[in-house]
Image (tube, rainbow, N blue to C red):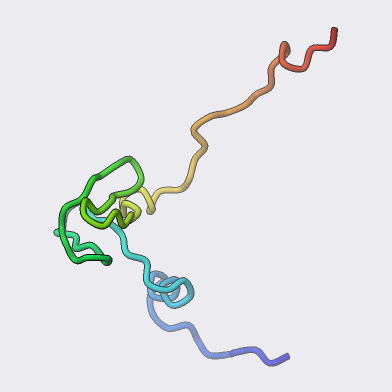
Length: 84
């Protein structure tokens, strides 16, 4: 089996973009043009921003840079599995 031994040049973000492809993000501090229609009107939610015209959804840059953490924890219930 032959392996590709070329060095990975560039920053971490460039290497990830090369492997995953182009991933547009919604940035709060800039004018964001929709990749679908090119317009700049957005409905912003907790984790995504949706274009007001063509409904293209983009992940928020602030949210995508943070690690994923669970919202709910299940610790078990003494009454849920009780046997009669």
